[in-house]
Image (cartoon, rainbow over all chains, first blue to last red):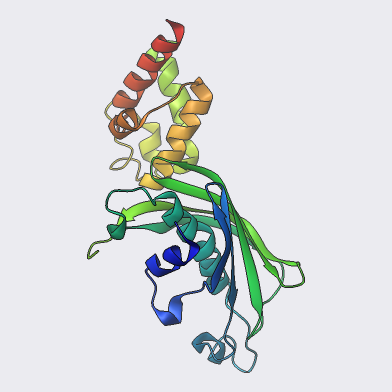
Length: 148
Length: 86
């Protein structure tokens, strides 16, 4: 499966898709990057007069690249792949550095296990200087999209 | 390993995954992980993985699908342990 095919399968709309490009993907892990557009809607209010990327958005970015893209790759042989996706079921993440408007981040994810429809990954986000922004584990379950 | 011992081992494995501490005190063969202990399907997977590690057995998809109650889970563990011994 091509990296571009995975991006096409992502179920997010434009304002909530936090994956620009996949740098690498195989059975054991994935790496991808995203640049937070300086005019993203959340910077208006988070915070007033002091824009910084919300931790939930960083978490979502790690989940979209590290969990969902990898999950779609691992499920490439599923019979009805158009109708399946992954829902985040738990995460435990430490945040070390803030991310400001316009910054590019690189997410790297390593599969811990994929069994009984549950994918668990060790994920980290770094800036272009290679400094760790946040890291932790994220897990999700395979789901059937209700209107897939 | 007798059945009571198996149930005790199972309770130790389940404890970190449930907030229903009073239901945990009343666990019996008919306890349902999802209905009685309010364990979600993602944590149920972790319980199965912990069971594999604790009892050194391998659980397949068909067995996993059955393991929704204490009784069914004990039956699967017992049969896998017997298969390993034999």
